[in-house]
Image 1 (cartoon, helix red, strand yellow):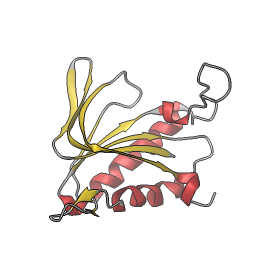
Image 2 (cartoon, rainbow, N blue to C red):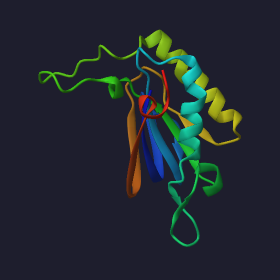
Image 3 (tube, helix red, strand yellow):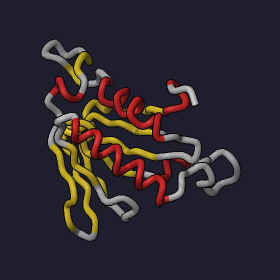
Image 4 (cartoon, one colour):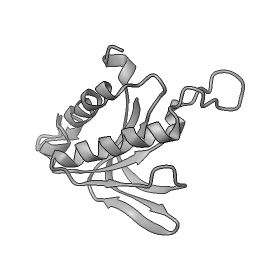
Length: 151
């Protein structure tokens, strides 16, 4: 699994000219699943995401996780995170999980994140989405399951 995480002042996602999710201050997370990912990796991955202390405290130090900051989460599926852009000039998506299996991961992730009593907004899995946001900082982080989880 891979995630690109940004601290945002606001973010929204539109599908077919309708807003499907919008947040004010919080976290925008693009989430992709690869063929080698397993369901037992999902919760530890999401816990790592939620525990990242990337929000500023009252002293301006990045000391707070999402819940402590009172922020919200916009969680967007993005299979292109599983691309390989190093061979040739056209991205290869051979390592991306099949859409059916990836949707199952995404749905389980959303259910889990919402069970943590967070405000979680989403796009629509597999849809063409227009994402708008104001990145705070700018601060952008990349989380990859193979960097901290044993397969």
